[in-house]
Image 1 (spheres, rainbow, N blue to C red):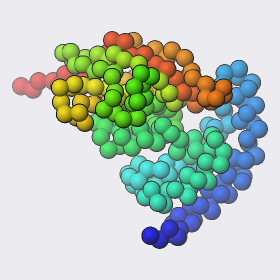
Image 2 (image 1 turned 60 degrees about the vertical axis):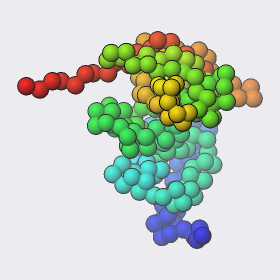
Image 3 (image 1 turned 180 degrees about the horizontal axis):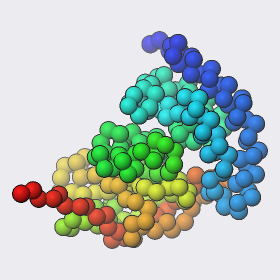
Image 4 (image 1 turned 135 degrees about the vertical axis):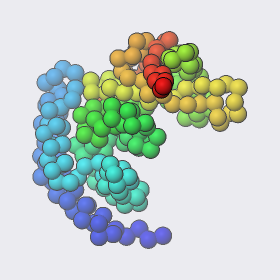
Length: 244
């Protein structure tokens, strides 16, 4: 397999390397100082928004999305060397709107979201105005295997009721985290690999509780890795209007 950079990728690499040298590396201390001055380890540093404006102006924006309607239209092979460069500084990927878990969540919304969901959640995510989280992992089971998921999602009339616990939910403590994609079990009687579904749960939904942030080896990360409870929280589903 040929891993050589195409002309397109090499051009992006050089522009990205220059951006890192001009704006990211010189502001590493600024970022640290802004976090410390806030007194909140999960604070959104002002320097991020300032650099986002520059990154977007330079065409270094949403590079991860293979969909040309929303992103740069790069394949995984083409994006990999760019991700490697951004990964040299922990917070740099957010400057280019390429930070997880938003990347995967935007891909899900771009491929499977309704027009209303795209307007409400995908658009501000693509613009770097809000953040998101993906709630899959659970404390009592080996939930990297989704067939072990225990959180239940039940449809009752025009509502969905969620019950269960999640943890290591990256980004949940961030103030800008406004939407969760939650994986749960909707049909325990179905085939083992067809029992699960995902649902969009806005942060302000009643019953959504962030229990605590979980340190990693004693370290508190700016993104956060939270334990959460979903207790009879409801996500209203608007019924279709009848015509005639």
